[in-house]
Length: 188
Picture 1 (cartoon, one colour):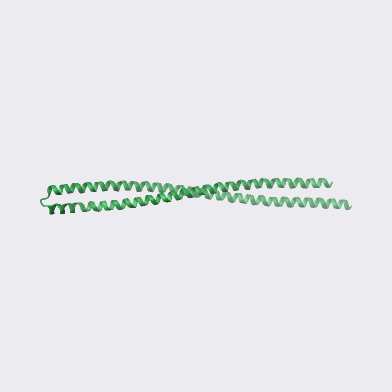
Picture 2 (cartoon, rainbow, N blue to C red):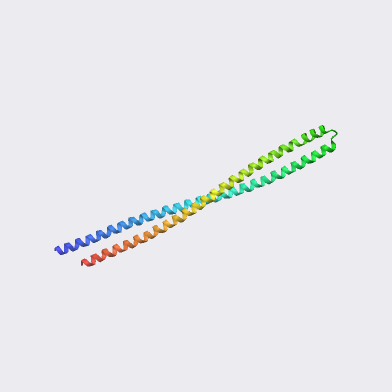
């Protein structure tokens, strides 16, 4: 009777140990799955951030193109204003009877063109400043995108490690069950 009782207690202990091992391993697998899900969420966030950065760079390039176009337009307008000043000065000299009248005519007829040139130069400076700012912003966005890509690679590595851990935990469950069955068989 003591032998049977001892045998049953041994079986019970083996089963309890196996159940404890399996429970621990299942908890580890559950944690690994949660970690994988967190990594997937992080990867999604990184991809979303990278897309936003790419869109910002695209917008910055569009703005730089607009600013460069405006700069070219301002330079062309400045050239036209200078041409008009020269033409008006030549006409004033041709038509002028005295030097005072020539100077006043040149002054009157060129003041608007001089103001236009000043405005064109101011606009050109603003456009160049905008281009510089857009380039700096684009560099920042590209840097952020590279950082997000690095983070995504690291998350993928972590996910792979978690999956490998999960495979190991499943193997441990299998081994615990096999060991438990072997102990029960040895008892008989």
